Length: 182
Image 1 (cartoon, rainbow, N blue to C red):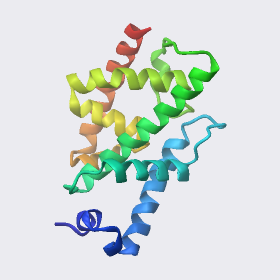
Image 2 (image 1 turned 30 degrees about the horizontal axis):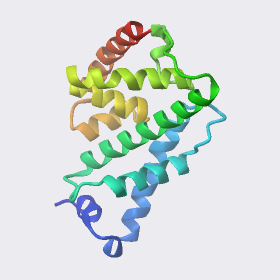
Image 3 (image 1 turned 180 degrees about the vertical axis):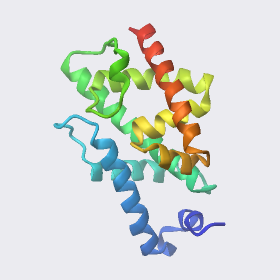
């Protein structure tokens, strides 16, 4: 079993602090990347997102982590859910709910993501997961985890070209699904 996986499966008392510092730094980098795409007045920051995700993972972690890939997929999913819940709370207090049509040009994740768009992507992501699990995983890791193609490729143990191809297909699928939702 690799050292990272052994560390994840160890009890809190026996965990090596050095590995935790490295892991925390990596989680904070992922969260900072994800938060860079959020609104400027967001109530969460990268540190808060990491801490909230960690607390959720502590509560719902499997008895034993299989590997690094499973852990980071769970982290991305936890961050996704935290951001979606925050967006839902803001929309509920602001003006209720409602889906908004999203032009294809706005499916890009490089800029700040309005709450409406974040929720719309979240809603159709479950449908995508049923149709194509790989595309859904790439969307989660990229859109909600803030990861780049090379990082996703390493995590999923596939070629970066494969990730780019799946991302292109997933973006088109998302655009069409979001148009149908509105």
